[in-house]
Length: 244
Image (cartoon, rainbow, N blue to C red; front, side):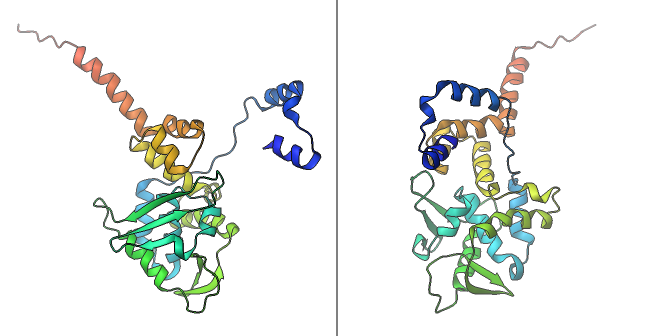
């Protein structure tokens, strides 16, 4: 990022300055960027079940699409009507012009493990779109049980996780940033046991580092590892019964 900014603004290629790069690397040691807090699958389910549609319908749709597709805020802003195809029992969503130049698509369908109809929530929101809307953006503002013609901007998407957190009575609502949905999606997928390649395709990551980070941080994966380790201990242990 810094290399690109200096190259663009100052026309200087710092990749040819090894001493400067070494200095910047030393200064960066120990630095850990702040990460958005994520939602658990139970919290996602709770919000979709309990939040009233007359106030939270647009937020519900953003949550469903954002988590199902590991979407960035900008990707949700750019989503258009033609990118959302109703297949009857599901929706096919196309994500184009992404940050990494990798187009993605994913499906929204109802789950056997949930009583929530994700398809019905999305279909209800799309059906409320006002006739005569001159733009093709799928996300429009939702006020007093009605959709307006005004587009939901990137800044507003950045606040959606912070609006969801208080409803769920979560502490430090401001720590749920615009990256929350994408991080939640990757974390839930990692918890399911997905491989690095599956995670990379899902989020459109070119590098394995990010995907490896989610797998490494997965509590459920750590629990599985613990089960395997102590399962071996249990299998190899011998119980001696005193028959006296």
